[in-house]
Amino acid sequence: MAAAQQQSGVTVNAPWTRAAGQGGTGAGFMTLRNAGATADRLVAARAGIARTVELHTHINDNGVMRMRPVPGIEVPAGGEVQLRPGGFHLMLIGLTAPLRQGERVPVTLVFERAGEVQVQLAVESAGARGPAGGGHHH
Image (cartoon, rainbow, N blue to C red; front, side):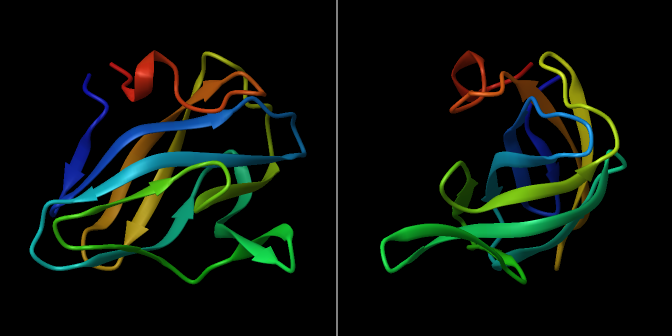
């Protein structure tokens, strides 16, 4: 199965997460591409494995990097946005089960225009800096 999952112009590529313990917090990363002529916005996400899922970014607060929730993540028309360590990402808060390397975690992304898009986060090692296989999972 190809990594790209498309609906109404939005494509999700290389969704991944890091291994994490039950009761802890995980993070979701991916590239969102918008082939449409109108900008879209990721406004929410949910996952059965987490008590709640929030959209976050990192900001530089007087030289200290801090995570902050954001109300949405813009996906420009004909462009893309990367959810990656140190930038925009999903926070999976209150994990009800561990995220184990090699598994896949279903997540529902909610877009303003594209609606709900189902993705599977590939669980990488706890210290991973990116998805395995150069960014594409098949």
